[in-house]
Length: 115
Image (cartoon, rainbow, N blue to C red; front, side, top):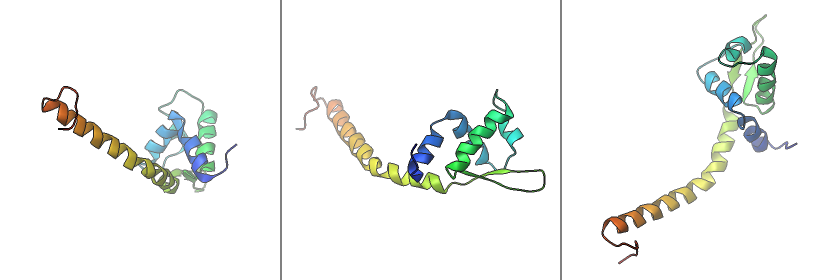
């Protein structure tokens, strides 16, 4: 099993339920029961998802008497953003080439060749 931070984060984000939980927590703290409401699964199943998110450092759980609110910890998402940034330049260059090609096509060059 991968143990580097980026791999843990990406693995946790691979599941749509966990992404949904993070989206909910981006609005503010919530209990396990509140997080489970939109899903057709047991509290135990939601707790397993929370354990994965907590293990990846994406959430933390408070300890306020009986109430253990979950809260978003977004720092690991910055690592994902930084990693993706390396690919953003590639995507932008590809889109620029496509834009230039389409412009040539619209100018009447059926092959899209530069003049």
